[in-house]
Length: 234
Ligand SMILES: Nc1ncnc2c1ncn2[C@@H]1O[C@H](COP(=O)(O)OP(=O)(O)OP(=O)(O)O)[C@@H](O)[C@H]1O
Ligand SMILES: [Mg+2]
Image 1 (tube, rainbow, N blue to C red):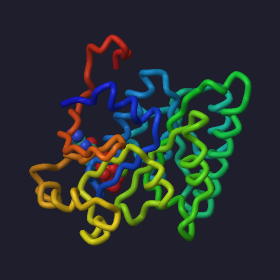
Image 2 (image 1 turned 120 degrees about the vertical axis):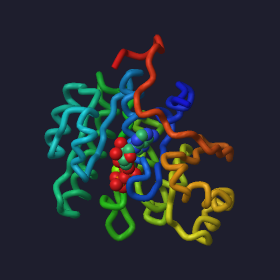
Image 3 (image 1 turned 90 degrees about the vertical axis):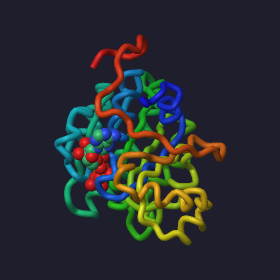
């Protein structure tokens, strides 16, 4: 089963979290959503602390917040930010980028741009449990056209605001303890742990777009769908 346009649209309007252990398919999933969003005119930033070459098709690669600023000024709709290794620079860099995004959203000529910022390995950008950028994006962002997508390995690593302010939740296989999952009202996922732990179900995911309805979803196909008139050919 491919991704429906209605499902993709949810990621353009509302914040998201994408969770799963290493190699579970988080970045692959996020990358596909970002590509589909780009095709429908949404601007995207992929924050990639892993400098993952496999995902360099997601945009123009920037290594500093200043380079990102330059691309934002030129309305580049597909940007990758690869932060440096140090934690301090990662945290400060993302804070600067979120300030730029918020300021651009108030600027003539840029106001109407809708932007999704996907932050891979979100925990690397949080210091002592806090991140100015994540708080800003996940609290005021949605109202001004800036939508966050947070990727991390365990729910427990996730900043509280990102979890509670994300309508879209995508859970691959996670290794949070069952009692922790229950404390997050995920009793229904606990019931499916055996399913997600079975390697035969690799790349399956459990997803909601809000409203309390969750669904087990088949892996997204490795190649992108074609033939939708609304989308540019790939
Ligand atoms: N639906 C899928 N169909 C086919 N291959 C997939 C699918 N999802 C992921 N893969 C492949 O599985 C591997 C792991 O996926 P991915 O990089 O998304 O994992 P990840 O959860 O981001 O892991 P990490 O925490 O290590 O970054 C990649 O080689 C990717 O191409
Ligand atoms: Mg990844």
